[in-house]
Image 1 (cartoon, helix red, strand yellow):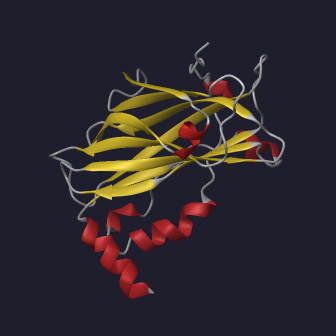
Image 2: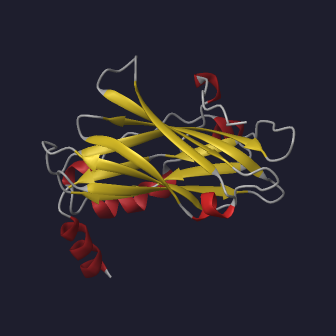
Image 3: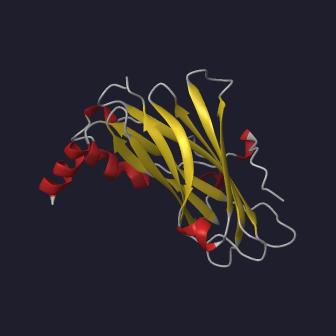
Length: 209
């Protein structure tokens, strides 16, 4: 049975911000407007002050106007936790980027997972849309800790260089087996897409090493 991806706001996971501080500071040398990117409100594992059983990391990317950008969605799974299915919602500003598709990565391939994706509008904020992704492993298998899928976005043609599109995730996971149950606590790390020439960041990284 496909995994239901309706995610109540009361179960939204928190967004860890400390892990990204160094990376965003480095990228801001090439993209001044990157400083101050917003993150999802902290809840779940952070609020409960206990280690997350499953953490979802939405990665970072960069592209010039009109270019496609691949954003990895990676799971970190604690020992003795078998993930059978995940539901991901990624809210993004559609004036800067649009969601094109989801591609299987090593985690989905390893579990012979069924992967689906849809895009919906955000009723509360007409300037944003939400990509809804469902990943369900084959019966008798489970999703390993790895990059599970890659999200493909396109930078809008009229997006301003140096703009930053924050990718705000919500996340839910259930156990593998015949009687799936919610996995708690979970945590998420938000992602970003920087609008700009890729060579700017690459040259910046080169000269800083």
